[in-house]
Length: 180
Picture 1 (cartoon, one colour):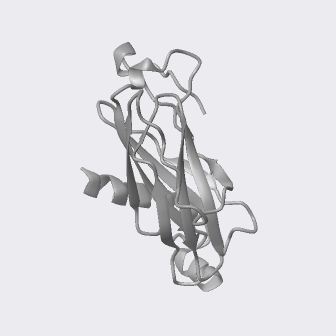
Picture 2: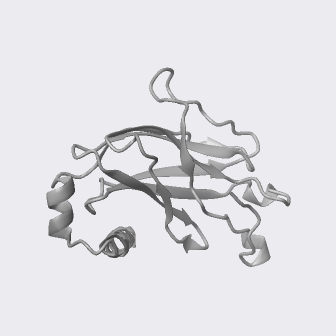
């Protein structure tokens, strides 16, 4: 299933990139033929329900045209959510260092998240349409867990933006219980 979803996501996002009215070859001439590289990552594998999960990333692109962070959340029982696209701020086109976050706190009780597990697959796209290799992060929720911090001095404490997904409560038939 995973082997099908990631290429399908890549084709979908490539289609979005084509909306710029430039052909892939023209974008490669403008931005270069080399794609982004995610060089370092860190994310705690466990946390309390309702906490905000941080995924730390370091990435670079030889052409200096990093464009967006693509996050694909997989929640057992629901499958894959729609891709979350986080545009990379100007000034971060060559190198990226910071964290993206998933807010799991909602307006209602988050007790349903206890013992829940999910995974998030991250890729970075550049303006030419190239994608980095995917990196997948598993996460388990339990009341007694605390989120592990990243290694000291390894990543900047800089928000790169949210993962815009609203988790669904399986006990309510999929009704959203969290918001970003």
